[in-house]
Length: 83
Image (cartoon, rainbow, N blue to C red; front, side, top):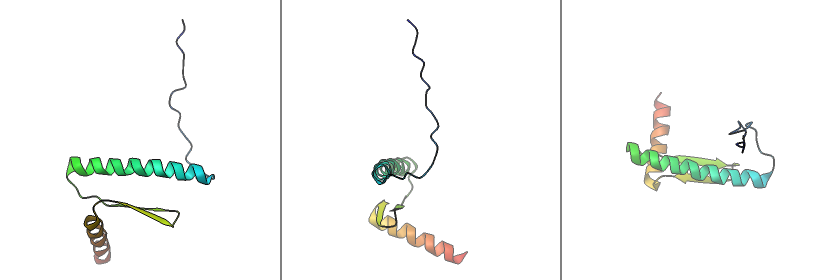
């Protein structure tokens, strides 16, 4: 019996999705994955992480404890102004 040959993993062309429903589903899945990776990174390395994601300029999603998000955003803006 001959083994079945597959094409394996294929590289996907990066382009903006036109269909709104596909865009929303993909965004939700990737956002969850990003937040999981950030959580693992925070735990393994002992760092404070804040992620703020704007979806289509209308919805805002954030990851991190509320006070950490505010503290990190404030420190980011104060460092930018002092340069």
